[in-house]
Image (cartoon, rainbow, N blue to C red; front, top):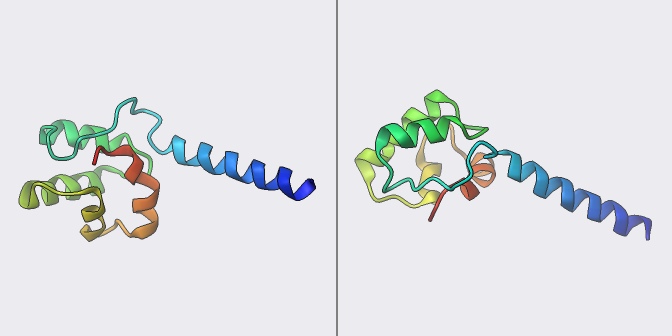
Length: 92
């Protein structure tokens, strides 16, 4: 019983932590259809992406459009762990 409670708490905390990544965003970012300036502003609002990464994402998108969310891993500074934290903030 005790192990089940701990597991439940861990699952709840994991879901909560994942949801905080894009709290400022009520809607997911459409990385291909949204204008560059707006994508930049929305990206900066995501925890784990600051102005430098946002700029890299916009530049990458402009050169490689259309892109998929998993393509973001090609960008310097976005590895598998960061991608896992932020990918739910984007429309596929």
